[in-house]
Image (cartoon, rainbow, N blue to C red; front, side, top):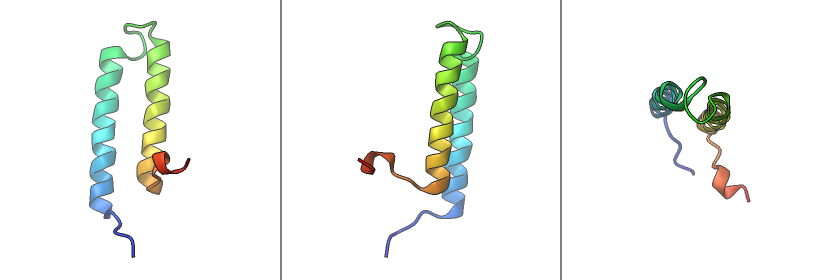
Length: 64
């Protein structure tokens, strides 16, 4: 039987992901440095992928 992560641990991961995303957006995101929309869009896509990985418990590195 696989050891699965509990609900509170997943919520903590999503909370920390949200805090990291907000900090990156304030620091480098839309309207700031490296052409603004470019970095903001990249951070948004990465955050969506990481949130999906936390929600579905998918290990993206073991898919290939």
